[in-house]
Image (tube, rainbow, N blue to C red; front, side, top):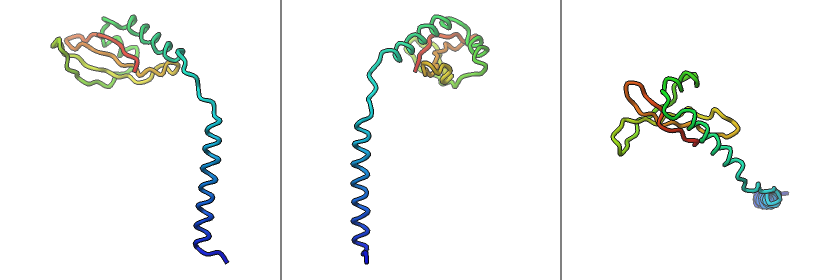
Length: 116
């Protein structure tokens, strides 16, 4: 007849074997090599979006995106009222979270773009 101590030892043994199998199995998985291709795709998107949107009206951006982004007023040394506006991931290839600096005013302008 098995005692509770035997069951506990069997459970412990199972855990040890399971951990050993998992650690050996995981150790054999290939580690992806560091590649500049993902970074270059993100940098390329950032350069393209900056060239496309710098100095344009925020209203144009909203019209193209089809919605307003999530906005937060940010302090800055120049004293201009600015906002950080986030539109989320719109380009699955780069995975960039589209983020813009908007210079607030009567007609808000795009100050800069960042791939986050």
